[in-house]
Image 1 (cartoon, one colour):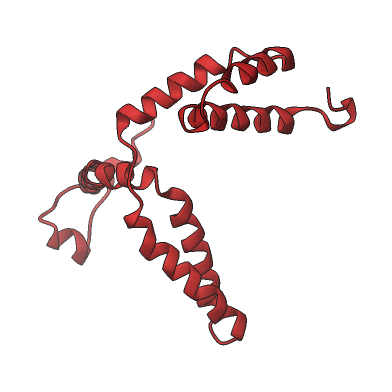
Image 2 (spheres, rainbow, N blue to C red):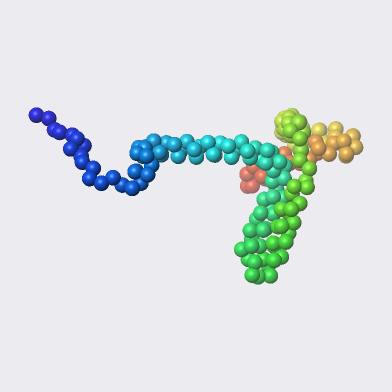
Amino acid sequence: MSLRAHRRSLVVWRQSAGSARMYDVPRAARARRVRRRIRIVALLTLVTLRPAVRAVRTRWRPLLAGTVLTVAGVIMRGSTPGSVVLLPGLLLLLSAPLIPGAPETDRRRRAELERELAVYTTSAQRHDLEATLDRYPDDVTRELRDILAGQATADDSRRFPARGRH
């Protein structure tokens, strides 16, 4: 003796209006179709936004500051500080597209230069490099000095505060 399946004796007395309108397409198939369309739309959105992301890459700081100030100004729009914060935010948002973007070759060259300068880790090595850079004019060595200053600041922020300066 075996048990009968419960679904065999299932009788549909009344069909719902939703399934009758959808031409009797099973629910799972409709869900798959909807998910597929959502994925396609998301992919097309990402592909479309790639040039915008490239354009924003060099201008993200003024855009971020402008967005924060503008949102804060809109939230506090009834008060005096709100209007004082809103105007600089809008100016930053409007001036961000005017900032020239750095080409991809410049970014790659700077990243390679940063990797090469990361070899100078000890203070003695850095002092020797700075002494070498002092022999040349500042307009020639400006980028190298900027990178070294950024690396020194990053090293100081990673250092344990109780350990001392050197």
